[in-house]
Amino acid sequence: LNNLATKIQTRITLMKEKGQDVSAAQTKLDAAKASLESAKTLGEQAVAAFRAIDPAKYDEQKNQVLAARDLANKAREAFRTALKEMKEAVQLLSAVSTNDSE
Image 1 (spheres, rainbow, N blue to C red):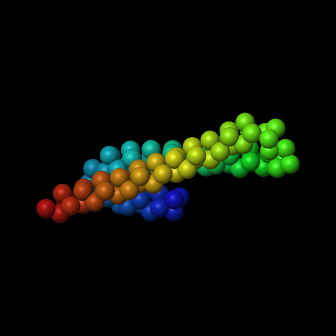
Image 2 (image 1 turned 90 degrees about the vertical axis):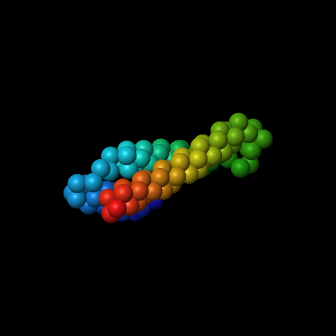
């Protein structure tokens, strides 16, 4: 997703240089980048939490397993949010391009 964000940012920059209003797309991309960073952090925390669990003592560590699973689910949702926001940024850019070509 980082590569996609970079491509979208390049497109925003080019369109801005042409005098097009891309502020809504920039705002959406900034939100996507924040969501992506959150997802990365949560993912790293989930991996660390899973690694800290001793499989031989699963029954004793059930709460830790559930907490790690919750972190992983939160990371997945943050990645989904980031992807959705990037798609919306692209749609906003397309709308600006369409409106300016008319």
